[in-house]
Image (cartoon, rainbow, N blue to C red; front, top):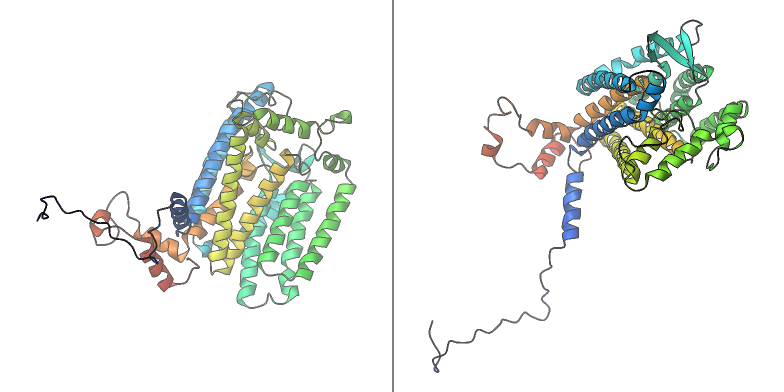
Length: 454
């Protein structure tokens, strides 16, 4: 380095920026995290992973809570402590097979199963009213005994039947451009739904009838029913509901227990109040798994309709919020599948299943929180009951199949390397081909067929 005349090294002066030049922005960690989350949220397989992972976590956590909440009830009935857990685990195993089978079926096969499932559900629901075949549980004549301790509730399969058959019917009418006429939108969808509702109400199961009505309204809304038509059907259903509630002292008593903090005369609100006690005693992180006090005979139906209360007592606010987050993710994924498809049957079926599961979860949790009357419906995938678990897991398999069938999702699954055996494609291993980019995959998917992926 050449020196100065004084022998000292030259002084390096700082170059000044022009007055109008702006300084480079510092990397904001919050903005960077938001960008990464948004990119991950917009990936083609997000709905697929949310449905599969969310339903799996809900089912596994439900098995744990069924085992914890049912031990005392089983011992009081002189049964082994794991009696109800083993039955629920058996139902979950069968349901897992149904879920995998439904997730691998093509859409055409799902549509072909719509009429057989509807006919089978109507036949079994009619058998419930035959003396000697149907049996009553908790005052509701909605069960068929299969021998031993195994029973089946056909009305649970009526939900799946209405979703599949209604979606197939509306899709065929949309293909023929008939949904613009109100008579084609209502007939025969509404009469068949009312027939199912009538068979359910013959047994006195108001909770299942409400969920079936919600599914009917969800299908009509997805079909684009005009407001006056929608309000007309809703008014008829509301009128029938008021009549059924007014004519039943039991339903009126349940309606009066909304927000109750005292069991009242004759302990009419005992179950609702002790559900609140269980949630209140849980605190933030709960009393610990298996340490519930209310399940020791104080809280009726602790492992079925009020399992959410036991969850709040043992796992606290953190556990209940986790369950709510899982159901919210499952509902969002179902709406996303219904909104991004071009197949009308997939849109109606995905929307019907999402309405079914979301409405049932809201009704169950709302009753436990004291915000809604106790309807006697289980928490989907979580409460004890094989009759409710089997059709629900098959419906989850439907959502998984629809999520896999999206064009961008099919492309992503085709590009994903296999873990065992020869890799897909002729390009060698995944590392030899170099990293994949989601933008490239989205461009390929949109070039093949638009799917709404952004």
